[in-house]
Length: 169
Image (cartoon, rainbow, N blue to C red; front, side):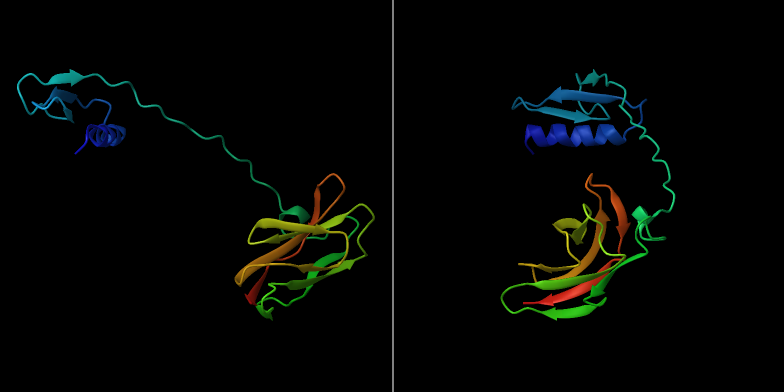
């Protein structure tokens, strides 16, 4: 076992060890260093360890349910916002091109300066200022799609439910 692997093994062992445990090191005839929690040979030297560093994460405050958190209630200015097509769990066939046509039902119509931001599998895919859009070059397979209406400052005002779409190319 190489010296670096031994040191790594020791460090991993030290992380799980109690603060009161004793550790020893000694040199082998070939000059490599060995570590253990028991002195196996005469002349092993005790190693003093620094205290383990611990971290307590900051508590994350709970967020109240709002239109931004899943369309519980429509945002001010919008009565409803849904993905009109394709339907949830739909299969879309797009040989070669990987296109998915989406249409949104927005009531009232999209307000000037607002845009629809589209997300595929949790990643931002694109933005549109119309209620119909074609997503190009989407990988084949099953995808989770949702959209959000954002204002000109990028603040999310409303969000659709997430739908599942199966794309065959």
